[in-house]
Amino acid sequence: MIIVADPSGLILETAGDPRTIDFGHLVHLEQGGRWKEADIGTNAIGTAIAALEPVQIHGAEHFCSEVGVWTCAATPIWHPHDGDLLGIVGISFEDYWSSSPY
Image 1 (cartoon, rainbow, N blue to C red):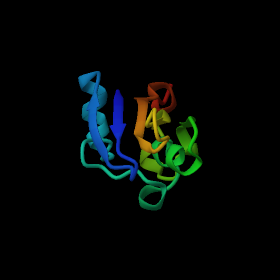
Image 2: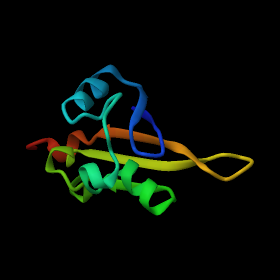
Image 3: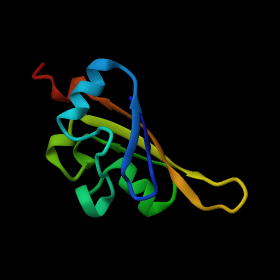
Image 4: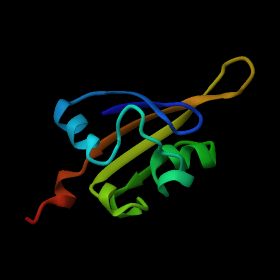
């Protein structure tokens, strides 16, 4: 799924595979979810905001164990003229293999 968040880590929009989006609702990876590091610990959206650079967070690198079956990447989006942080764009997917007992 693709995610757009504002500079505070508030998810504004998600789009993508319906199954992945449904799974994202379980961990509040959805419109209105707050993903700043201060709110939920290490995650791609929050870490991209804190580091002001692209990041990838995989599985157990997430602070919250409930998000440990996800792989997420995010990058800041900058205003082309004044350089202000406009928000974050991210891609997240459930890592089926890490959650599989096989």
